[in-house]
Length: 357
Image (cartoon, rainbow, N blue to C red; front, side):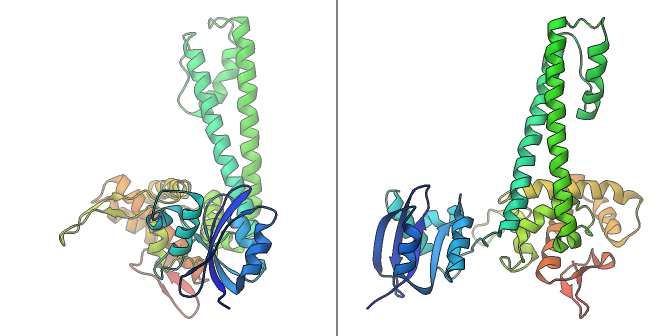
């Protein structure tokens, strides 16, 4: 009897569409299953050690861990790589078939399922990012409101924090009693957001101290706690990327191409992939570029030499690219960071597992 060897799954909250094929790609099973039954039915139909493909969307990592514990091979695919395999009008069954077809391609790139620990760290980053956005919005609201009373708020959120108590105490600045009460409440909201962000910063610091990979990444110039923990989540064990350049490409830190007729044309960076991690790397690189002016280490001299002939933004992105490659090398090669070789043209690993980037 022919067995189902590969299953494509279109994920949802309560209804799951599956598309099963045999080793030759012939359709054997196509069905709509409920949340309470679909895992058991897939396990019954699929041969032991068979492949299960899903789009890397909400709940995909959870289901990947569930099937991984049952001994199946789980392949998560980015949604943009599935879309070209949709043959007709979009519906859930067609999507499941497209996932099954996409996962069979030998050149397909897959997303590594995240562990519970990685998802914990990622959740902290997501929550912190949203809180920072709320804090920025709250600060801008305060600036706009006091501006209607003829008060110009200083630049920078730290300056704003110091200015608000002065406004509240100044009886001659034109603020009414009612608005002073409202401003006091807004100031309380801002401080609460500050406290929550600080609490998450402390938790991420604890995670970085307890994680040996994060500790290794913290040795890279321009990498702090936020960037190190975010890199730990994104890289995993590094096996999802063939080399450091592939990881930099996944973050959108390499030039986009628009080439035709054998004439290569490189544009600005593609800005694809994880925008949050790319932002952290660029901000970290910008700080490293600023402090490099007074340093004499190998990487600082590389930055100074590049700064002499390139715009500061180009230098910053080039360093962010290099930081991403170094991070991949440290994780994938289980290597130790060597600052004396940090500006090297390529990645090598010596017998003592020291990396050059």
